[in-house]
Amino acid sequence: MSIQKVQNNKAWFMVMPVLILVAISAIIPLMTVVNYSVQDTFGNNEFFWVGTEWFQEILSSERFHNALLRTLLFSGLILAIEIPLGILIALAMPKRGWGVSVCLVLMALPLLIPWNVVGTIWQVFGRVDIGLLGHGLASLGIDYNYTQNNLDAWLTLILMDVWHWTSLVVLLCYSGLVSIPEVYYQAARIDGASRWAVFRFIQLPKIKRVLLIAVLLRFMDSFMIYTEPFVVTGGGPGNITTFLSIDLVQMAVGQFDLGPAAAMSLIYFLIILLVCWIFYTVMTSYDNDEQTNGGGHNNGDLGE
Image 1 (cartoon, rainbow, N blue to C red):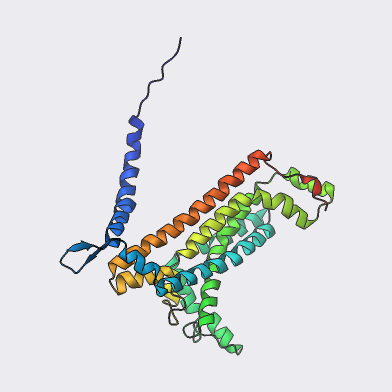
Image 2: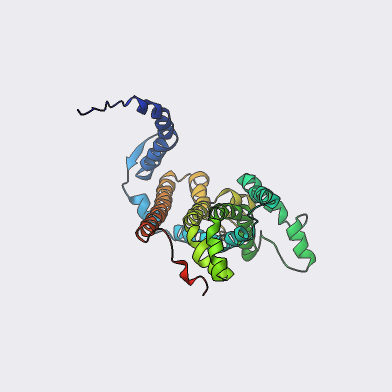
C-alpha cells in the first residue's frame, strides 16, 4: 500500500516578506538603472530612447579605461599583499590557551571600524603637520605628502586597506587551520616532515576553500572601494586615485550625466558578477576534484 505525500506550499508565504524586501531594495532600483541606461532626458520628466549609445560611449571612453586599470591595479596589489600576509599571521597565531582569545579580538578590531571613520583616521594619520605617520616621516627627512605626490597617495591607500582588511583573511585562514585534525600533524612528525612540507601538503590543501572565499571577498571589496579613498585623497592628486566607484559618483552626482552613469554602473555590476561566477566555478570544480580523488592528498611525500 503506497502512502501519498500531501504537498503543502503554505510555507512559501513565510518567504514573501524577504522577497518583497529584496524587490524593494534591489530589483526595483536595478530596473531603474537599466531604464536610465537606454534613455536620455532633457528635463521635465521627458525621456527618449537611445538604445546602446551610452554603453558604446562608456566602453570606448579613455576615462573609463583609465579608471578600470587603476581599479584592477589596486585590487591586484591588495590581493598580492593581504593574502600571503594573512596566511602568515594565521599560521603564527596560537591554537590553544589564552593567547587565542587575545589574538582573535585584536584581529577583529579593525573590522569593527566604519569605512568613513577609517578614511578619516588615515587622513589625519598621514598629515605632515599633525599626523603620526606624516610628521614621523618628515622628521626622518623623508619627503611624504599624500595630497601632492602620486606614489605617496597610492602607498597610503594600500597601507590603509592592508591595515583594515588583512584581519578578514587572517580570521578565515585561521578558521580553516584550527579545523585540521591533530592526527595529520602527528603523522607529519612521525614522517619527519619539514615545516614547509606540513604547510604544502596538509595546511594549504585544507584551507583552499576558505582561501578562495577570502580572495573573492577581498577582490570584491577592493574593486568596489569608494569611501576610504574618497575621504583620504578625493581621487587625487589629479585623477591618480580616481577608481571606478569614484568616477561613477562624479559622473552621476557631480556632472549629473545619469545615462552614462547608469550604463557604467551596469558594466561595473557585470564585471563583479563575472568574477563571482569564475570563483564559483573554481570552487565547485575543486570540490568535484576532491570527491573524485577521495577527498585528500597522499601524505607519503611529507618527509621530502
